Length: 114
Length: 113
Image (cartoon, rainbow over all chains, first blue to last red; front, side, top):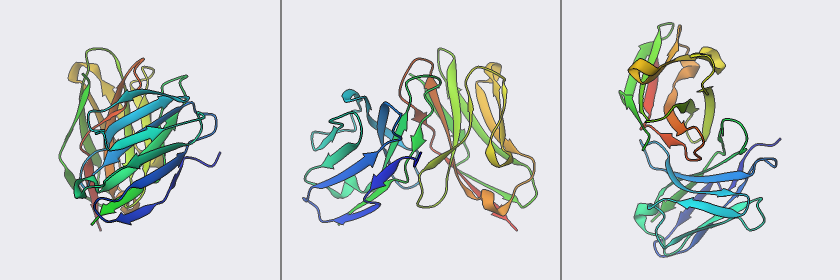
């Protein structure tokens, strides 16, 4: 068990560019979550998958954001036409649908939009 | 909808003193409750969880929390603070059978030598 992996850890981009983050969950976990965290705030839910199905999306997830989990394993979060307000830490977590649904988080991907 | 309120965005204690971080939840049905810790530039690490078993829950690093339904609280305590406890602490709630974890705003714990 290598935990939840996220890549890249840091991304600096110019406004208007597209960025993509990848998350590799714990292999036996069928649920995968994306959260966004801005400085001094708690993580805010963006979306979650059970296997390959995206079951819930937050209103925070504008049309510029898209998340996929094509084979029920890794997931990608793409942000198109980035804005300075997108600067944040993007956290991925995974869990098992059995038991108390305890989320295990990755180290996060920090996005800075200039 | 469920929510979490953490009282005090910043708590400062002396090394060796009692740590008390406050969390109140709002939920119309029995919740699961969690405390996570976040060190600078890192993800969140689970400290402890309440899942409707014992109301006093022991976690890692000497932390514990008590679920009090009558007070809708889940405060985090540690008898004696250590310098390595300096971090951001988040309380979170999930309704049993639901899938989304909802976090509080966090409390930054500072330990004074």
